[in-house]
Image (cartoon, rainbow, N blue to C red):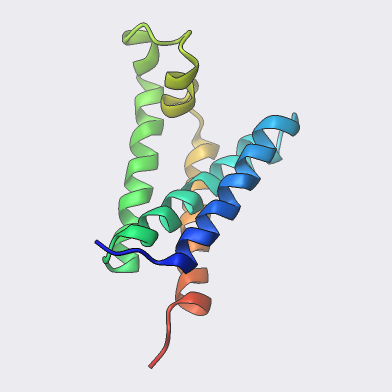
Length: 124
């Protein structure tokens, strides 16, 4: 374990953007697609803040996690657990499966990984 302020600052900024989107954006593109894209970027940089792991491992792990949550939405896990009216569970588990969410996750994780590789990791 470690603490990396550079990644922490990026994660905090993305979290603030996500909160602004959740509170103020009611559209059919930014909130559902860009919000999903940014959530994996947020997770990537959050894990990079505390884990001393290869960037590629973090990227793959976050993508698998995000797709796993989407698969649970396909099987309507929230409804099976009778949590469909629980706001926290709906935020964490989501509510509806969408193939475009998986596309957003893929684009987001590629964006985060390549930004990290190109601009953030010190080259020797």
